[in-house]
Length: 438
Image (cartoon, helix red, strand yellow):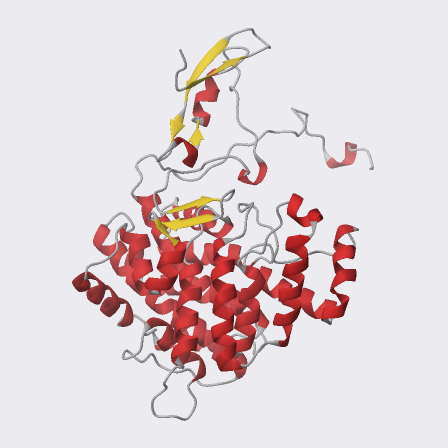
């Protein structure tokens, strides 16, 4: 009779071991064995025991999480069980942030209190503005974000009390609220413009747009279509399971570092071009192609490994990224306001050819979230080196949900991966005068 266990025979010793199998919500949502159970498999009593070797965590679960579920084969993304398509169409970013952190959608009273508390924590200390002024005018916005987030730690020393629920709640309000303020400050600094104070009468994304683009007008009024578009983009980027930056947030937070430093670690991970900078690479690719008539040759160059197709394929998704479908529709609404980005026609043609070409279909290379998002951001007036900030701001809620889940998980300890040592076993030290010249 079948049992929920794995039987392993060690051919070195002939011994057989039975290891329990753990399941997620359903068997199809993930099954695993505890890596620590492998330690019993050893050739002698003084043997350390067997480990799993998995560079880049390609097939290792570092935690149990109830926040985000991805089924890459079927192109499914759900926050707390809710399909991303429903949330993007019917919800708003702050409501989704509440869902991620609390596990349930809020009541009207809970939503109003949540929005009020975040809105009234958007202000930052005046000394932080002086800190931002210290950056060179052409400093990269993400480098500035990493630094200013870490600097916030020094303004709120009580934030290190991460095991206290009320204190975590306060820091969550602050970090989500101040994320848009810091993001806008980095933008204004690179433009040589004075900082704009938050306007508590506006929505979260409307307030962000106010701090970005307000000039001489008494009251900034965001365009409702662009405001909604940015809100949807924030929903789509809010969380994405155990990606590089979320893993960094959890790893730094596992030492019980305060959430500002943990978020700075997550932001630093997101800064990398292999993570948060992918949509910028899409625009560069389209500009390199140059025109629609050159796309067939570019496709051939990709097949011949002479060029890279950016914005297609994903480490998790082996189907059409569900976020990409939503953004593609969103682009049409944005371009009605901004005018069509000339790169869109090239992007649509590139997608059409790639989705019909057996070379790409066989490899399951479908458009991902980065393929169209950069085109929208550029149409809205954002410079390319600012795109990752627009990724980081909404991801703050996902990071905080993951951080809080990790802090309250009794199985979690300080992150400390094992290694397979491949260096010299042992050797004796020699004085420098006796060493052979290499």
